[in-house]
Picture 1 (tube, rainbow, N blue to C red):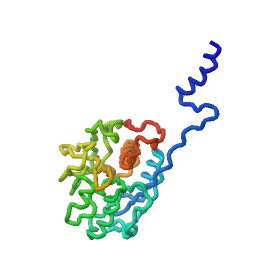
Picture 2: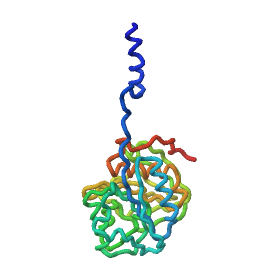
Picture 3: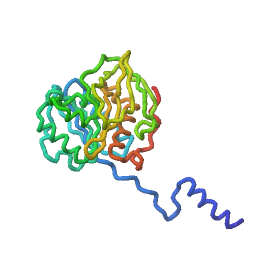
Picture 4: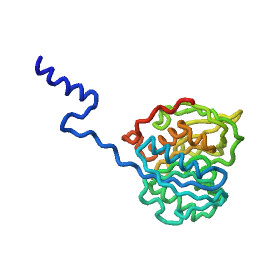
Length: 263
C-alpha cells in the first residue's frame, strides 16, 4: 500500500498531462510564415488587413506578413508578383485583393505558378472576382467561378459538410449586411463546405479546392469590416488556412475562447 501511495502522484500527473520532474513539456511548433496580399477596389483593405492579421495570429501559431496596396482601383497591381519566386519562404499565401481589370496573362500565370508548384493558398471575398483574363485559369485555381454579387443584406450561413476538418466544429450563423456572390461554375476539384442564403438566392460561400500540388481554401464572405472582424469569420478563415497547410491537427491551433456563437 505504501508503494502504491508513492506512485499515485506520478499516475495522476500522467493522466493530467503534467510533465514529471526532470522532463520537459512538448514545445509548440514553429509558427507558420504566411503572406497576406491586400488591396484594390471597393473594400477597406487598410483596416481589414490588420483585422485578419490580428485575428489569425490570436488563433493559430502563425506569423502574418502583409503586402498592401492603397490603390483603390480595379487595376491595382502588386510589385511582388513581378518576381518569379515571389512566394519563396512562405508556408501559405492569403489573397485578399480586388483587381478585376488586371488581365495580363503572364502576370496572372506568374501568380498561379507558385501555387501550382505547391504553395498553399487562401482566397477571400473579392479574390474570386480578380484577374478576368478571358480564360478559366484563375477560376480553376479558386475552384468556383463567380461573376456578380447580390445586395447588401444579411446572409444565412449553413455548413453543409460536417465531415470536413475545416467545418466540422463550426456553427451556422447569420452575417450582418453582406454581399452574396453567385456561382456560375463549381469545378470538379472543389468541395463545398457552406452555403449562404439571402432572400431567394442560395450559393456556395465556402469551399476547398485541389490545385496543382497544393490545397486551396476560399470563402466569398468578408465585404465589410464588421464581418472580417467577426470571431466566427476569423475562426473559419484560420481553420481554412491551417487546413491548406495540412496543419489543422498538428498543434497549430491555440487555446482560444469559443467564438462560434452568435453575439
